[in-house]
Image 1 (cartoon, rainbow, N blue to C red):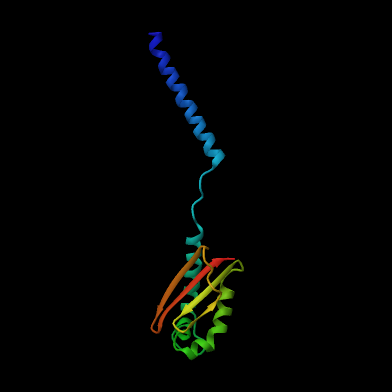
Image 2: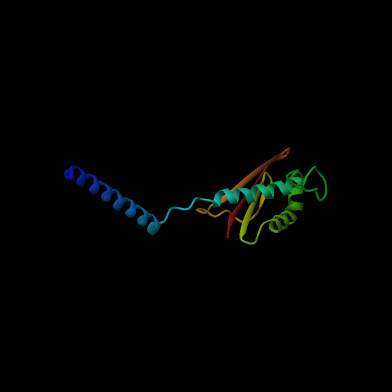
Length: 134
């Protein structure tokens, strides 16, 4: 009977060593953190689009966004005010670009960085808001 228990004890020790090594490597190497940048950036872009699509227009139209995309002349008239408004909505660590059928305001979107995006459809066309961290 003593002989049958020796391999079982060795098996338990081997499993224990593998477990301890696994836990030690888990602490030493760490676990990858989830990618929370893009979903958070999408939320910033969505929130900005929601605010703009519910604001009263400055001169005419149903909403602030509808006024901006109403015509090329309306976009040219409102572009600076739109840039300032989006700049006030977003925090200082975010840059943005608002794209309309008549042009864009904000910064050029850099390549290779995580960006968030939200698109609002108006009668005159879509408005896309992109945001990214500085």
